[in-house]
Length: 327
Image (cartoon, rainbow, N blue to C red; front, side, top):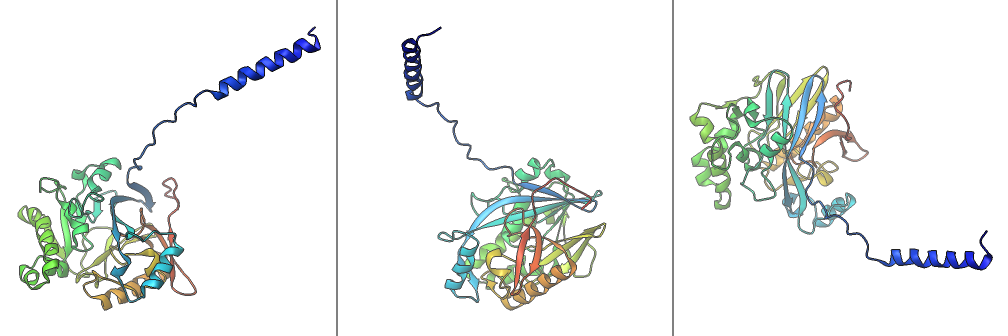
């Protein structure tokens, strides 16, 4: 049996030893992983499968919003905890819809047309388990560069080797017209050229065509006329087993502002009055009919619903979860 003095000495020695261990250098932490998850998100729509694709982001300055004072714009953005000091980070999204019989891509992203923060649609199609050549149809909501430059790969060839590309007749008549381009302000003429260049290889191969309102473009998708942002801006209503999803393109550019105040327009709306009217109408339809929404410039994945508020509306994004076809 230890004597009291000997036990005290042992405890003191152990304490000194442990203190020495903790005084040594700490183990180094692993390096931070600075890459984000792949930019796709999948959900069911009845028997259809919808995959949101992240092209990237662009910073849009609040001065591009029209019809509201900058002070009020800043307050609305601040309520959403968004940093607008260098422009509000704005997603660019596209959507794959697998109907069982067809793989449809709605919009193709911007490729290299708008810098290094964009251009990831093809990469994310592959990350989502598909190949670009699996896409049989590309539907364009409109012919702005951030929605169609991705039709081409880095060598200027079709990125979608087997796809038919469809756009609204009014948009094609506008953006593909060299006469209208020549009469446009000089700073806008590049957008016309990007549209012509993006569809030219498809035209040469007989894989570009146009549609008019009321026509049937693909099985399972209904054309919804949403003109204003561009002359032929079009949304597509997909429906399966009573579930409906409106892929609406550029109806909303800033979710912090334009849901609560749909009367606020955007600098690049070709017809700002019509764009405001369209936004109000479509939002009301979506609320009334309980449509799910897929938005090109809503925070990725840009999927969700719209809720009516006492004043205006609010965006309700999807909740991350497994693919469940029972909902």
